[in-house]
Image (cartoon, rainbow, N blue to C red; front, side):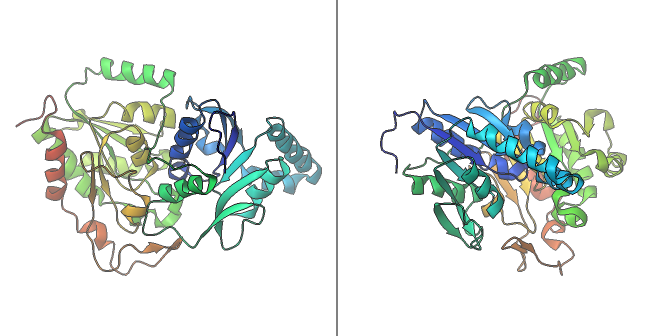
Length: 370
């Protein structure tokens, strides 16, 4: 336990996973800087999530380690891989970091922090995989409370009484400039509603299990435009273009709907920051909206919203849309059970139910019809 909070410290936060996982660690960073204002906080992540952290003013330096690339390099040349690995370890060692918080749940990254000379290594020990940690909390699974709260529990183990800070993400200045120019060029006014109707790519062929039906999104967009005089920003990945086109075929006012397909995440963050309300499936974009303190309507089907949803949940700006049938959530203990209900947990949510929540969030927005 560290008692002298005025003493300079250096910390390394490790999370090599996806967008949501990394954003769930940002309350850790905030708590560390609040308790140790003069400290330096470093971060180890993969290449795909660097954009989340690079504009964060609380982070001193980011170490990027892409395990897939590392494995590919080792297959081409063991010597080249060894040179790369030693260089990476030396890069961390040069910073003389004192404390690591490892959220990888595996042996590999604990070994990296050990080799990097980090004396105190904290983490969640899942299935006794974290043998290189010398301070750990046993983790059976993420259940009953939010993932971010499990992460914050490590600060208690370290000796800090954590505050329940929200998620944080920061826009890239060039992307902010681009988003401002887009809104001005298209003379966009009134409430802007961001919509993420696809998502779930990390689930591969099972991604459809996380998606509210596309035809319902089309109906919802029509009502948003007709009843609330809203402009709609429609977000999707580059491999989801056809699904977005199918949604747009059902729109009665397509000129009021702007699609952003395959945009950089930096640009997406800047665009989401323009929105009065964000509506989406359980995706990374939903976490951007939460970190930007937006009003959110979120669809949760197979995943437990209390574990992987908004953090912290704030009734004034968060609304979960769920159809709580007996078999949900079916994603438990890091495993997805086979769906035997034809995704009724999502199909059973009506457009009218969503509109009732929209009314609550947009009733005071300029341009919305009364």
